[in-house]
Length: 140
Image (tube, rainbow, N blue to C red; front, side, top):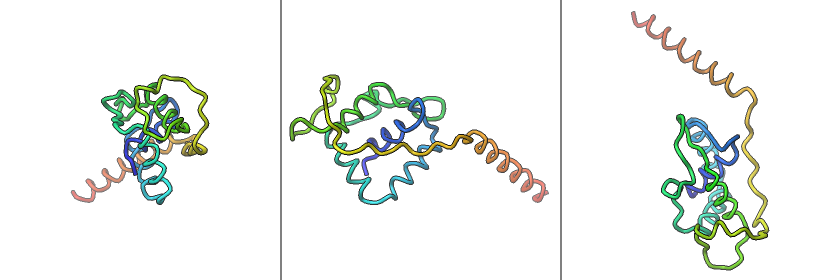
């Protein structure tokens, strides 16, 4: 599994391309254990841009306890998913050439985003806080 391609694919599935680290780790774990199909797919996508570096190329930025996909990151991901016009690897510098490209395969559907995610996080934090308070009380 190619970590950097996986990060791009996860972030593109989130609203505004932003995900907190907890969500990124969870989604990464799901995809890492999903089998050879995902590993083969990310490897194939990574071959399109051999020197992919999501940080130095400005494809992903750190923000507010999470990572955000930049517009350049979206362009590179779209380019990687497009069917190559030639058999040799294409470099990231060519991303800005708009061409009518046919998708190599259907894009991976975005991960389901529960509508009440914020509520569940708040409830989880509250349960953890209560558990810590009980543990302190029992220790006294």
